[in-house]
Length: 149
Image (tube, rainbow, N blue to C red; front, side):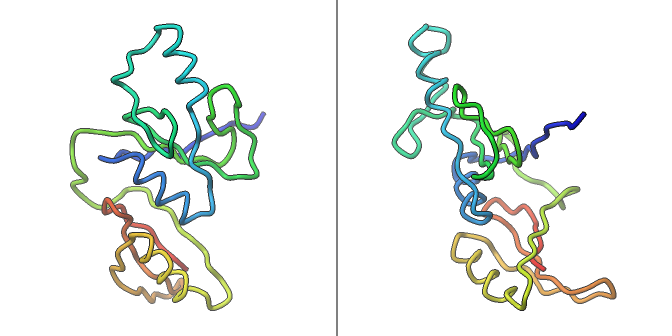
């Protein structure tokens, strides 16, 4: 039996985070509008818990990004494979991440990849060279650390 999973990231702006990480990873921002429109039409949810994002209805406090080649549930828009989910929380990030994403550019492409990610809104923190290898430490637009090797 294979388990499905998603990485859930607390944040203050789930749509900006989903946009950043979708662009960073070549993922797609999930389109939850079919489910949202259905639930609104049934009176099952209030319009106040939705916003407009990318010209369609979206959840105000959650947004996802999924790998474009992985399956997804057409009725909800939720990815069924490699997926990041961003949930709005009231508190700001307070310390170092206990879990982070490593990106592997390979082939001497790290400097170009770091520059591309900075162009998307990442912040370069420092280059790291240790016995185990070399990588660049960056932060996403909300300060979450990630590495580029």
